[in-house]
Structures are given as structure tokens and as C-alpha cells.
Length: 256
Image 1 (cartoon, helix red, strand yellow):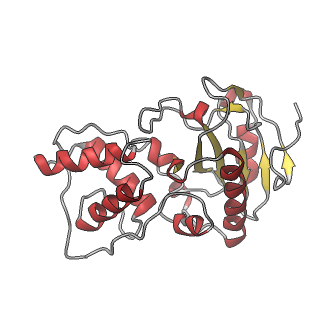
Image 2 (tube, rainbow, N blue to C red; image 1 turned 180 degrees about the horizontal axis):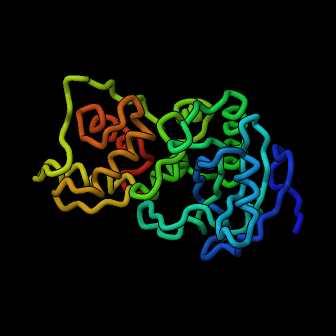
């Protein structure tokens, strides 16, 4: 099952059997970033390579910055699960998945080391250039599966990645500690309009005017990625303004 790596940045190949041909795509159009959520990178790689796990990723980047490829880029890895972005419901077929080792929120959630982030920058830049992946199609697992997932989380430095030429980013509006915003239980035209804005950007949310649990999950996921200074799932002016800036910065006004 060994294969030649797709990127010159790969340090080792550790093939996973958990893959299959892409469905409806001749090349990936998205890049999806995860954290491993387990104690060690060795444990993560071992699990991703086990047939019984039914999960995999194209790449794993350990805490030292070592890059391991586990699935060919031409193949469909099983990393996204039940997920959606815009009209895309088969995220696995559309994307390349990178697992960045970090024990995650349930394991103390340490900062991502500089050497690891350097490797993430380099590999992501290589992938998006080779496949011509648009900046707004570089996402976190929590963006496409907001109800289920938190990764890579608010400590992941998306701004640094954007400075390296990867991903869609605008300067977030500063948080006002006096502005607690609105949350679950609130309803009305303002909520409908904001839900519609999140939907236009790509998030899986229904514009119904009710600030219910799913909307709170989507707001939280958005904050983890684009406004990490305060992650509380509430719609304050900082979150709204940041979302408006992102929509204005899209290459078109339509959801991709």
C-alpha cells in the first residue's frame, strides 16, 4: 500500500486503507484542517491507519512539524464525517484533510508550536497552489460540522496562515466587553438577516428568525475561526461586523 508522496514536504508515508475514489470530483476544491484530539501523534496515526476506525486523513502534522502522508490526494479520505458547506454535502470527496496533532479541548488544548505551524503553512500553501484552491475554501472542521466539532479551535492561528497566503481572513472587529450581544431564545428579523448572512458565507444554518441551538453552534464555530478573542456563541457587534467584512471580501457575492 505504499505510494509516492504528493508533496515534496512529506517526511514519511504511512498508508491508511481507509480511502476510496472521490465521488464527482477529479481534483479537490477544498482544504479542511483538523486537530487530532488524542494524547499523542503516534496514537493518532495508528488510529487513522486501522481499518476498524473507519476514519483517515490525507496528512498528519505532528508537534515537531513532521509531515506524514496517509492517503493519496487523488483519493477520498474519511475525515469530515457528516458535514456541509454551502451546497456541498460530500466534503470528503471535495477536500483534502490535514490532521494537526493537538490533544484538543478535552486534553488541555495547548498552543500549536511554532515548528508545527511553520509546517502547516508550508504544506497548506503547497496544496492550495497545486490544486488552485480558493482562499474561502480553506476551512476548519468546526466550520463544516459546527454542531459536532470544535477543531482546530480558537488557538489555531488563522491570521498567520492568511499572512502566508492561505485562507480567507479579515481583521476581526475588536470585542467590546460591554456588548454581550444576543443569544438563544431571541428571535425576529435581525436574527433572520444574520442567519442569512452566515448561510451566504457557507455555514449550514436555516434562516428562520429563531436564535436556536444550531444557530448558537454556528456562531460559536464562526468565532473560533474568525473572531477568536471571545468564543461565546452570542451575536455581538464585533461578530456581526467581522462577518460583514468577510462577505464583502468574497470574490463574488454568492456562496461558493
